[in-house]
Image (tube, rainbow, N blue to C red; front, side):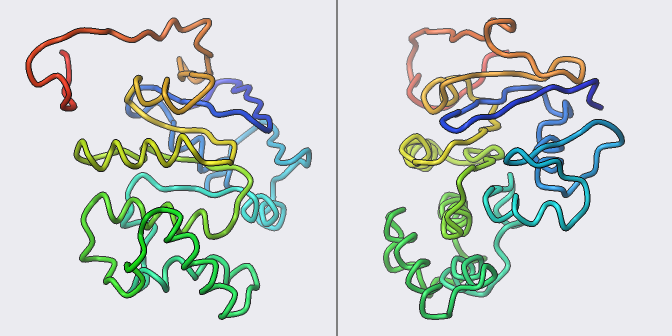
Length: 220
């Protein structure tokens, strides 16, 4: 799928990755996390070459992956259990993990969600709780896979604002060029298995005005 892929990511980078379905965007994230193994080439995380499952342990502590589908991320009965799971898994005490979970929920405007049943949440609520599960692990880098996928206008607006104000460096997969321009400082795409940055790919915004234009829509 990838052809001599060459990609470097530095502290402070906020990269938007816009590419067609099936081009390998999610696979790219899964390779970084060690969920998929490349057939050739070399991968470095934090200046260390990684290949075995053990090699990826440090990277998984320092990198947070937000899956495209929140249902792939949420598995505990209640919100607080899901958000506290990551800190517990990192060796925090139960009291410390719950404190981190409550603080993270509050930071995302989710006070009072602690005892909510995860599978009964709305799509936007699930996405916010999924983001909380990642942020509770206090990662240095975020991999955000379609965070606005299948959300309505208000939920998209809220999550876009939250993401743009995060302190972490991140790579953001999205089909929304406006969102990418708003929340990132570089834009790239995948062409024929290679990553191409915006100075080569000429991504641009089409500005227009018509009735109901404030709502998300598509141009054929």
